[in-house]
Figure 1 (tube, protein in one colour):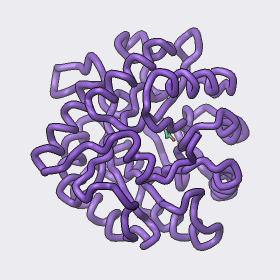
Figure 2: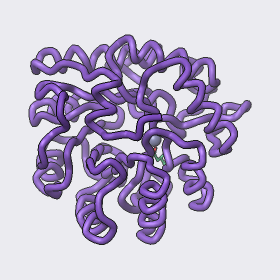
Figure 3: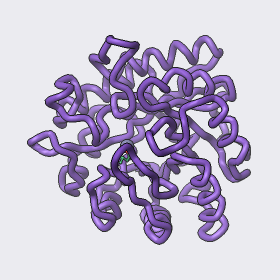
Length: 284
Ligand code: KMH
Ligand code: ZN
């Protein structure tokens, strides 16, 4: 792995929060932040608890996932007004979103965007990321100067990342940040063994990596990531319970737990400004 950016403490821990996602219905989880006000409040609380980046899925007035560019743009602006967080928009959307709309997400001018490195079975559905789409989205992110976070759901996605970087070069800003999304039914399991295999396979251009475990794999993945010096993503997109029978009420509970685990591993949460340096996002 290449050297980290200047002025980023070696013990720094990037905590990303994914507060909403596209899979959980508001009716099943009324505390899920789905309105703009709820999202900004949740993001602010998460920043206060130690998060430095927010991974955003937007909902419409009926609380259903949407990729409406007007809403995405307003959301980016509201998060910039209400927090200092690095704003990352999901280009994954929901499994039902068409590829052309997913490319349009970059019109909302986020700091960062997710970029999944291949198609994966996703529960009973398919999360479609054909290779030509991956390349189109990557080249668009370079053109628009938006820093991608490469989402790796499977070991094959690491191989695809190696191929992409060889063909199309480095992202805007020159740093390469990846996130292992583990424990999706159909993707790699949320285990320490799978994470070790993924990290060992990363190309040398990668400058930072984080991991998140879906559902009950959240804790094993977080502990495995910390044990290897990785960063953490947490949030209600991925995990709705703190432990069996104890629902998450606010995303900042998950952020606070990540910070506590980090403290045990002698890691200090990065500030949003430090995260901007780590990821080399464009100053806006
Ligand atoms: N909602 C999933 C189908 C991303 O945000 O880029 C895809 C997802 C990944 O959440
Ligand atoms: Zn997402």
